[in-house]
Image 1 (tube, helix red, strand yellow):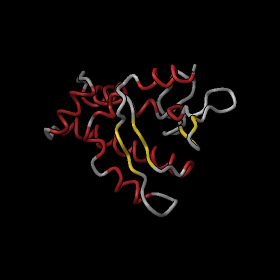
Image 2 (cartoon, rainbow, N blue to C red; image 1 turned 60 degrees about the horizontal axis):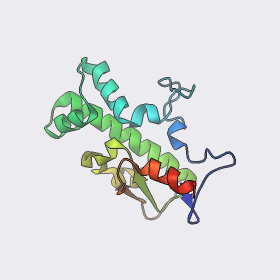
Image 3 (cartoon, rainbow, N blue to C red; image 1 turned 60 degrees about the vertical axis):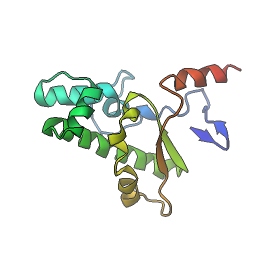
Image 4 (tube, rainbow, N blue to C red; image 1 turned 180 degrees about the vertical axis):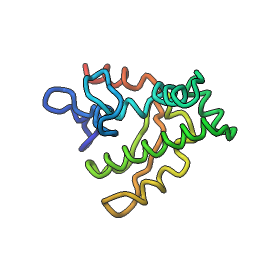
Length: 154
């Protein structure tokens, strides 16, 4: 999270760990010890697990998105569920931070399908009225976290 042109570190250096905020009450167990963390629903492995749970089919998240684009019903259902959870999560963040925009990172952020209709969905449910924050794909690569950590040591 960047606020006032600076990275929000928090009091103990853990500021911005938004993936460990609750998205689903009493949801899937998370390695952090809690349940229902956003990370358990909005990462590639979560998409893969959702398909396997539904159809016992083992595919990568990339393959699931490809099948969804081809109109395959199970994959499309998984992707649509993902998109709804992503919208809910971003709406929660919007209501807390009122950002100018969101930049998504990680492997799933490369899937153009997740951006289709996302800003419209946000605009329907935002508490703060006005212009809907844009949602963008990162431009630095999947190494952005490592680059950020390196910059923090300077």
